[in-house]
Amino acid sequence: MGAAGEKITPELTDAQWSRLRRYGAPQDVAEGDVLFAAGDRSYDLILVETGEVEVVREALWWTEETQLARLGPRTFVGELGLLNGQRAFLTARVTAPGRVLRIDHDALQRMMAEDDELCDLMLRTLWARRELLRHGPAAWTLKLVGSQSQESQALRRYAERLELVHTWIDVDDPELTHDIWSHGYTRDDLPVAIVQGEIVRNATPGRVAEMLGLAYASEDDTEFDLAVVGAGPAGLAAAIYGASEGLRTVLLDAVAPGGQSATTSRIENYLGFPFGVSGGALTSQASLQAFKFGVRIAAPCPVVKLDAETGAHRLLLADGAIVRARAVVVTTGVAYRGLPIARWDEFEGAGIHHAATALEVRQASGSDVVVVGGANSAGQAALALAQGGCRVRLVVRSGELGDRMSSYLVDRIREDPRIDVHTGTQVSALDGDGTLARVTLTGAVDETVDCRALFCFIGAVPATDWLADLERDDDGFVRTGADVLALGDVWRTAGRMPLPFETSVPRVFAAGDVRRGSMKRVAAAVGEGSSAVASVHRALATAEVFA
View (cartoon, rainbow, N blue to C red):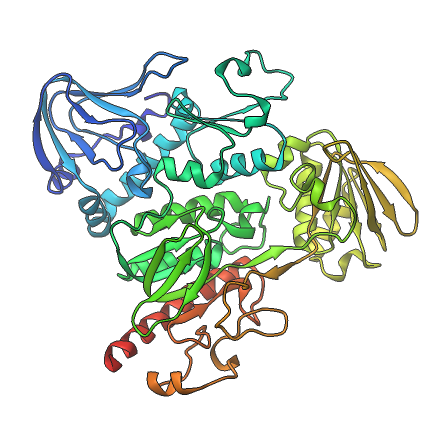
């Protein structure tokens, strides 16, 4: 399966193969048998004991079937979708008769929990296969066609954040060599998603998630031990700790895993990463860790209401579905602030960004950009954009760059000739035809400058409007633990006081940026998310005593 063969098809020792076989159910197969097919809602990990299996991307209406791999004895067939619940997008077909063993999802999770060596081998292999598939012919199974519009970029960002195997086509790309309008859709239909050959016009992340099997489905009526709302660093940590300690855990996010940290181009002060780590890379590894422990991740999956119950709490989703869980950890973080100037909404997503990930840096490469903000996120974005070939104007309202920014960032920015710092300055006007082209700066010197992209990092407000029943401070941040003021009959019934990270409602917790008094740092959010789970265990144990 390509140059990375050792990772894609690892050589298993006799002992490893023997232990792996114990989790499978044997099946004799004949040539031509289909072991799983593209579109299957669920499928098994296939161990090839004898015979041979080919993995193919099925024919689409614009291209023929393509063989991706041939796997013989002592190998296994499967990729990362086995863990994250994605529908099969490839087909496995027997090309030489023999015997296989099927390992279903429950048995796969059991193996990963019981055998560390096999777990590590499986995770590395499935991850390597996903990476290989993302850059090969399998990527045609999900084809996204769009422009620079806000809707198109939201769909593209969703696919990249979830690291889906996909192909992105920009209709305005001057290097596009084929006629993308010959397939029956028009510019009014953008963005278009072509899922296994099926055209979806005006596609949204939610619709694509449904078709891929990544949306929350409530047909099994599962009651979870723990529901985590918000998949930023705090939410991922809470879900991972909860699942690793035996709690049936679901993680829900309105957009995609990663939260605000996923939009950070470089985190340099996180423990264990002396050379820095991008928010996207950190999110990827955390998501893989969550899959390892059996966390069920659903995104986009907006939660619009929490109904606190004496038994399982009820979370109402935007599509009307209900998630029931004995305990809830709220880690919804914050929403980005914009500037109160004319045409801001018009250009948001069409030149205005709140992130400077590799995607945005590539799009802005070689152009003039403006970064607004005086904290670390703005400084990191300015450096990333400068390194990406942009001329950067860093606009800071206060008179000193170091008022809210770490000194190591201030030093680097001042030493970088590609960055011009404008302190005591504000953006006062925007201009452009459809997309942002110019901005007006007001301050020590008033000027209008060319600007293909504006990156805004001026703070955020807590995403807590859906939490009407939880006690919050005047700014909307959730009170927890000893900070809770209203202690009524509900706590006398519970027989205790609020635990650390517990809100004014028993068995509902808050962690990370959404919590009053939090440190607003990635490391702190991870610590809060994991610490909240310790309180979850104590609360659930108390609830059983008083049940």
